[in-house]
Image (cartoon, rainbow, N blue to C red):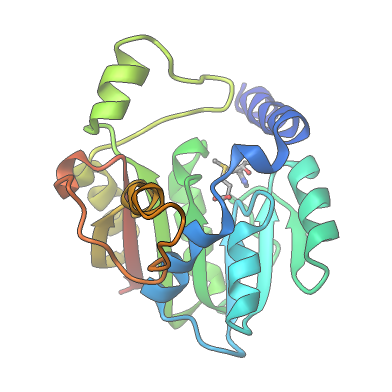
Length: 231
Ligand SMILES: C[S@@+](CC[C@H](N)C(=O)[O-])C[C@H]1O[C@@H](n2cnc3c(N)ncnc32)[C@H](O)[C@@H]1O
């Protein structure tokens, strides 16, 4: 049953990456903020869990970090490998990461944890592969956002095949804390406000590395960006 569900999710992402490719994801500049919030340093090891086409890895390489990625979609992994020969990218389920213990200084998992079936297992394995002083960044969907409530829930537009899901702030906090992950910081997703600045400045906006003041209070943000450490 679970295996079938996992196959459906993989098949949906394979098809999406084949048909929509790069158009499915945010542009590269939207990913600098994650490296900045984590304070990624040169010659450190960065793992992006559910790396998709490798946007975050591209940014990690710009910071001269050693970059590793995994994703369950074989299509995404093939495309990412071709684009980023300097990164090590593997096809794997985030519930069983193919790495030794305590290897990574930084881990990102962006727009993906809500898609995963056994989130506790994913968190446990991310903890296993991270160094004791590692920093971890999750971007996860908020079930109290207007977008989720009014467009997805009300109009039954939640994508079941791609296992679209969401939780509110307290539910995410509980999930992390139950796995002994301590919250250092949590801010609203930065891309919506950056897009507005991009449009208002006719593309001249270049503050992608800085946190912007969002108009939306945290509790209504589309997505949360959590920065965590092991405790
Ligand atoms: C919305 S995309 C985000 C991709 C990437 N993090 C980004 O921001 O560009 C979600 C990704 O999660 C991956 N995924 C879903 N479940 C997974 C799992 N159990 N293990 C690894 N990857 C998974 C999908 O294949 C897809 O690439």
